[in-house]
Length: 381
Ligand code: PMP
Image (cartoon, rainbow, N blue to C red; front, side, top):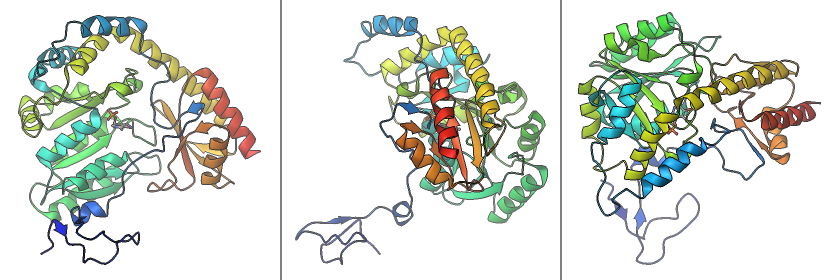
């Protein structure tokens, strides 16, 4: 049996590093050691269009209200462990009570809690690739087997592939997949899943169906509409994109109270700090400003898509604040590097399943989008 800390008589590690006398080699779990992280490079550039953040800051009124609130926070005390005021305020937006709202530090942490509670050894999670990499990444970290389905040519989930994934799950045993992920609109491809697809998945899944709506406010419909009739549905949202608050790290899930209870059981005590709880609650008072930003970005998305269509690239339709495109005659990674040299950062997704030759650009301000389009036109000339 391998021990947690092997002694320094070990041979050099894969980087050729030997241990100092008396030192210990600290070895993570074998499957963790094999896992690559999921990171977009944080490079200092003028035009940052690689992580689907909002290009505009939140309204000045939000910042002023939060500043005033800071004076009232009893910093010597732990925050409300139940985060009840925040959960009630979020619930009010979706016509549900606080008991149906689960909050965490970004929607990634929500996804992690879902997999801690419903995934794990002997259980499987299904994804439809290409999709948001963290669904399968966090599944693996939590010891959950991953069943990878494939999207069709329109980058949507079709009926036959759904049936295949459910059959694979059945072979793994038990009620598998215990968690099925749909990302709608899907990152990095852009389209929202049609309502009848989501309904079909909810009806046929043996376990939870998690609809990741990180970009939900950009879409024409939301799976939130199905919550009342679907006890196995979890809708996950974030403050990072449409709410212009990526720096705050706040995300949430809406689900049956029983599911929220299970998520709270795997959550560390006091995991949501008092500032975040106040900031999230205050932000919800600026919904009109959020919807105006979303409308502006959707208009810009149309303009960028039309301009991209004039270039030697194939553009995928988008219901989100980013656009996926495939570079035709050039090497896409070379194009990515040339854009970085022009201080423009987009997302290189060439290594993702089925996305050879593809880059993803976030919709920024008008000036940022112009800089990107000019840069890309020059690189492809
Ligand atoms: N889900 C999707 C589909 C995303 O694209 C992202 C951010 N890239 C997240 C979840 C995570 O967002 P956050 O943790 O900032 O809420």
